Length: 303
Image (cartoon, rainbow, N blue to C red; front, side, top):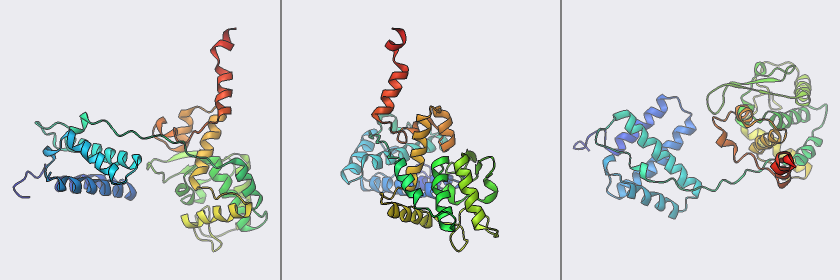
C-alpha cells in the first residue's frame, strides 16, 4: 500500500469518497447505498488483481457489470452499480484533476433497465377502506385523516409521520414539508374534504403536549410500523388487498395528470428534482390515451 500513490489506491480513494458523501450531509440511507455498492465494486476489482484506479479499463467495467448480472442482480441492481461507479469516478476526476487519467466509463454504455409503471392504489379500494373508519372515534377519525392526507398531498410516508402541528394549516390546507428526501422544504396542499377530516381527527384527539400531527392511541408520534398497521387493519376490514404506502403517492400523481395539471407542477408537489422521475408514477390506461388523442387529434382539428 505504501508503495502506491495515495490518490490512486482504490480503498483509500473509496474512504475519501465516502467521507465526502458524509461531509455533504447526505442521508444515512444514501451513504449506506454508496458504501455497499462501492465495497462490492472494489472487492471484485481486488479479485482481478486491480489495486489502483489507473488499472480500471472500459473492458474491465463491462466485465464487472456482466458479473453482477450473472450473480443474480436484476437490471435495476446492475444499473445502481453503474450509477455508483460513475459518481465515484467523476468525484475522483474533480477531486484530484489527474492530468494523464481519463474516465474509463466514458466508453461504457449504461445497462438498459425496463421502466415498469408503478401501480397506484385503486380509488375504489380507498373508498372501501374509508368506509371502515368509525366516525366519532379516535382511531377511526385518525385513520380516515391519514388515508385522505396521503392521497390528497402525494407526500411520502416518512414525510407524513414527521409532520408537526405547526406544519399543517387546517384552514387554508397549506402543509409545510420540512424534512424531505431531498433535504429541501416544500409546500403541499390539502383539499376541503381532507382538511375537514384532519380537523375532525384533531378535535376528537383533544389537547395534549405532543407536537406530532399523527399519534398512536397512547398519544405518541406514529412511527412507520404503526402507519403500515393502519393500512393492514383498514384493508382487511374492507376486504381489499393491503396497499403499499407509496401507492397513494402514485395515485395522487395519476389523478393530477388526469386533471390536466402540468408535469412540472406535479413534480414540484411530489418533491422530484426532474420530470424523468415521474415516468414510473404515471401509468395511464387505454382510456386515458384515447381521451388524450380525441382532444389532440390533428386530423379531427382540420376537417
